[in-house]
Length: 458
Ligand SMILES: *Cc1c(COP(=O)(O)O)cnc(C)c1O
Image (cartoon, rainbow, N blue to C red):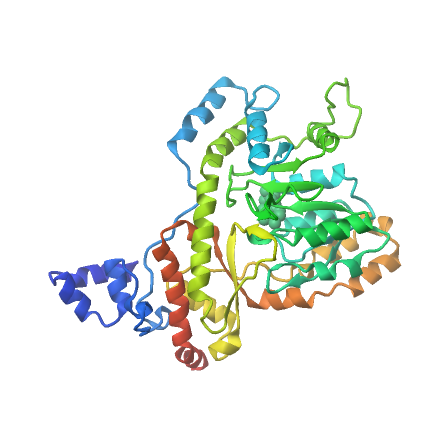
């Protein structure tokens, strides 16, 4: 920011033309003029990296998130003033459920308090629980591990395909045994898992499919929305997500009886048309105010999604030929990926061995925030903490837990965790020139790779 300010001051009473001519690099000109850096338009003169004291490619902030508009104020205030704050007194949660089901082309939707509890509800209602094994992708937000462990079940990790960031369907079948109850594919970053293969395996082996679609609002595989492809689909509406309400979630499905069970279970076990509490339940209800925020947010979801997709595709076209940068691959059958994060892989070899952490620091210094996102979280301690707990010790014979530990290996996932570099969804909401900045910053670091490696050794 201060660089930008001093440049503005320095421009002083030079004419725009004089200033552009005097600027030593295209980058400086770009920062002031707000245009695409000159070197990226063919000249390819990168200038000094910002992390080594040069001028950053970008001084502006990217689009911030969440975005809300004034139309949300009235309905939220009305609920507040009415005192009808829970779904038993109002109808806003129900309205949202109908709208979201229609948007996805699902028969039914039950809104819940968050995505974690959507997954727990789906597991309970599909009778996935104590002593079971659930085959799952290791490359995911930790909630996916937690819901399985919280159900006193074993998360059995199929391997990740580093090219797609998704569960490799070819590694699923060898993990199936008599204790396997379900497959939980995760459409990570809004990239659809290869559902045709996954559903075929599930059908052949008589397994349930619970889609963790907590990052995949409006993503599609085979022309159908993610979350409607398995037995049940689960969504999150947490603040960072594309359809946010601070906290929030939903379970969607097409089986009426199963969805009746979901509805009853999430509402303390109250079964429609029956008195008392004939089944076990939980309270996982969404509040009316959450639903009012969602009804406002849902208005922008399609346009935002289209923008992210367009920018993501453009960014891919700009960076795909930079050596050492490998954009993600989509599975055949994918009809829409929605980019909760934009993922790519970084090959340090092609950057003269510049470590990924240094590449990311250099990119951040250029004004492009980025993240390595997920590590091999199964090594973080939570698995062992669960396996040694009293409930697991009672639910599983020692030999099963020993075998589980011995087989916990995911080489594809380990590789991906070393190579991934991602940009969060809000970076994809601005103009095309924001994508140019990202691509130009990567290109600049590539061209400066020797200097960056040298500076590190010094
Ligand atoms: C966000 C998320 C969840 C959990 O949702 P919460 O609403 O935060 O509880 C689960 N799985 C994935 C992949 C997520 O990104």
